[in-house]
Amino acid sequence: MIARIHTMERSSMASAKEKMLAGELYIADDPELNAERLETALIVARFNSSSAADPQLRQLILKELCGSVGDSVEVRPPFSCVYGEPISLGHRVFVNFGCVFLDMAPVDVGDGAWLGPGVQLLTGTHPLDPTLRKAGYEYGEKITVGPDAWLGGGVIVLPGVTIGEGSVVGAGSVVTKDVPAGVVAYGNPARVIRTLT
Image 1 (cartoon, rainbow, N blue to C red):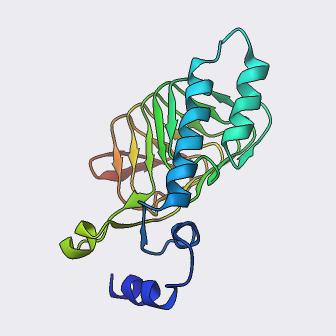
Image 2 (cartoon, rainbow, N blue to C red):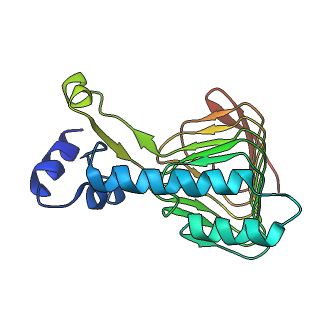
């Protein structure tokens, strides 16, 4: 946290958005960020109200919403995110109903990854110091879901976590630290239970 405070002091000239994307402390109640959140909320509303009978329109809206969307991606509404731009979805990604991407930092979902219903990828967090929290500071840490990983229904992934390639995280797990490639993990906090190879 001390390093983050020093970074905050060094980067006082940077915009709130620049600080946010750099993983530094920033104030979320910023005019530029407020405008972006509103614009994103309107796009999310259009996406969530789009018809399953018009998958091409749904794909167009998804590409407008996210920073990067690969081929053959399926995201089932309702879907929630804050900014959209930090989200990268690889080819053949499947995101089931009710997923939440708290995308104050990049969210990178690799090719062929599956996210079950109600999965939450939460990059945003707050300082432990209550004075900084009361002042409105927050920051984010990137989340990576590796290629061909599968997150079961209701999995919560906390800031800064990487899920390794091909790994499976059991339903309802809370992932507080990195999960290596090629394993099964579950629980609260999630722990590696066995390898898959």
